[in-house]
Each structure stands twice: as C-alpha cells, then as structure tokens.
Length: 74
Image (cartoon, rainbow, N blue to C red; front, top):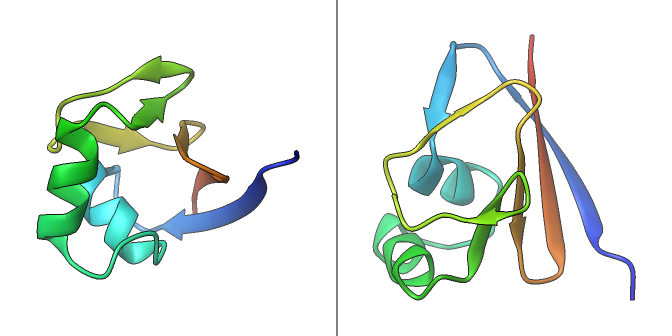
C-alpha cells in the first residue's frame, strides 16, 4: 500500500521532529508526538528516530505509519 505524501514548507533552517508532526497534522498534541516517537514508530530518512527534538531540515523525509512527510524550505 502506498503512503500518503505530505509536503511541508518551513521558513526556518529546521523544525524539531515533534513540532513537525504537530504542524503536519499527524498528531493533535506534542505529547502524543512524544509518545509515538518514544515507541520507535517514527522514521527519519529511513531510520528509526527516538529523539523528539531531532532537527528536521529541508530534504529530510519523516515517515509515520502510512504518512511520508517531505520537508522543503520556502
């Protein structure tokens, strides 16, 4: 099954992983994002990421279940 791709544009150099998940509407709150990250269900560029404060930059791909978030700078 194909993943749904979400393109997110940021205006800063980076966005923290938990903030990105909330910004992309993958979670309702930062607390839920923190739990999902701690459970090892989030991938950054194909690798499991357990750091909710991980800096996500342009070109990074964040995968959460059936969603793939592509980050671009504007």
